[in-house]
Amino acid sequence: MSHPDTGIPAPKAPSERPGPVALVASSPVAPVRPWWKTPRTADLAAGVGASALFVGAWLLINGYQFGTMDHAIHLPYVLRAQAPDFLQGDPLVEAGSHHPSLLWAGLAWVTKWLPLEPLYFVLHLASVLGLFWGTACLARALYPGRLGRWAAALAPAVMVVPKLTLTWIPTFDNHLLNRTLALGPELVALALAASGRFPAAFLLTGAVFILHPTTASHTALLIWFAALVDRRHHRALLTGPLCFLLSASPLLVQMLLRGSHGGVPFPAPEDWMHLNRLQLFFHHFPSTWMFADHWERLAPLMFILGAWHARALPRAAAGFLLGTLIACVAGWVGLEWLRHPAALHLHLQQASRLMNFVVAICGAAWVAKTWTWPLRRPPFAALALLSYVLDFNLPIIVLGLLDVALGRRQERDVASPSRWAPSAAVLGIVASVWVAAQVLGLSVPPVQLRFDTLPGSRVMAWSREHLPEDAVVAIPPYFTHALISYRYGARRQVLGTYKDGSEVSFSMTFLRQWQERMEALCGCQPFDVAPGTPELLAWFSSQEAVLSGYRTADAARFRELARRFGATHAVVERSPQHEGHRPPPSGLEQVAVVQPALPLLYQDDEFSVYRIAPAP
Image (tube, rainbow, N blue to C red):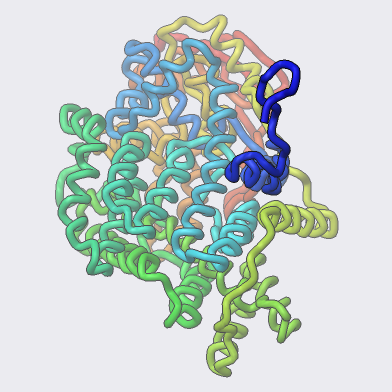
């Protein structure tokens, strides 16, 4: 039909338009959600919120330290990586080849743009975040579905307080170590193995090896046993180690070229066994362990991985447990029976550290099952949750065994947790700890970012500015005091500290140098222990004997140190310094500090610095 005047066809009425157009016009249009209201954005916000809350809670409860404890050993390795001629001749620094890691070189490279102190803090935050997400990933892999979501929410939350929960102290520290930096990726590798992705798990573990070889080896061992118990993945028993070796090859080649593990012969000499038993009994010598301090800690592990989970333990977790038991037995037999130094160098007993995370996850799954809604047994559920969070061994075992014996376990599935459940769990744990701290009058650990705020930092700063670069300094042979980081703070060589003894297991040369210097510093025989002396008392007594002997050193002894070891200067306490939170061993009284008759160069309210005049 056309227009009567122009002859141009008139437009059709809506009802006369073609069918497809009419259909599109009449279909309802779905409303477009703003990007900030989509489920993916909500999940991202929940993840970021939970991560920030976890990291903040960690710092609030555990604090942070830079330049103390193991940093006294690691920081000189970083400085040696920055400058190959740093402290040439210092026995500890020279023994760094027996403590292999590419982390030192990596940190030295990054410090071209970022100072070491903020770099360490940023990496520490990253390692805490890795702890959180690694545990969550492992929980989701061990328990797919709703139960895994609950375990992923609760298990990381209890790790905010590692010294009071199932994770215990060996799993993390309040300062950055290559072990803590490697932990998150290792947990992700275990999660990959639990999901059946064994090549990726072995490749990731090999990459972690270049940061911390021992814990990466433990992870690879646990992954191998997880493949062993799963018939579908037996091919990974051969291909997996090849992937691991390929990924770890950058550090493995360096270790072979430097002879990193050739420092102790087999069988280990008697003095090596004696000093390592004295220094590291709590890590590697089960025959010395006491029930209250060590074996009793295995009770929740045996229960959660045994009694309650006898029929519900994930297959991968069973493989991890089997690998841990094999490693611990091999470490015990290899070190205490065969006296093979590799059994200690590999830290085989410490493979159990990773099981703490598996235990926390399995325990979280148990609590989630107990709390299935509607809540059928409120008193039991409340006690189960309290036992899990606070690691009360007796209640958790009794309640769990009663639960199994009565056959009243909740077998039906649990409800889906809210996406904000991890944040709520962390917030609940933090609130509980805060209330406990207020009731008990506990102080909040500090977040210490700067080295110049540590005790002894003034004398170290003065020494760096005024002592010759080739100075060899005798300092009080502390174990925990911040002055043990004198090599880093003053950039000067020291005769030695008691803390240096942590490295005696890797080299016979260093062991004998360290022992000779400790005996010379105190003018005594601190490592001659009477038969039958408990190891803990012998360890404390040897520390106190070395330090007390140094406090009584006169000018003649310092001149003898100059003659034997080339000492040029001495740092002496103005008054006895507190050496940590533990009391001195019984039978050893704190002695007064002797100020030697030597030329005085510097003095503050903590320490004095003397020049050691050459002997006449």
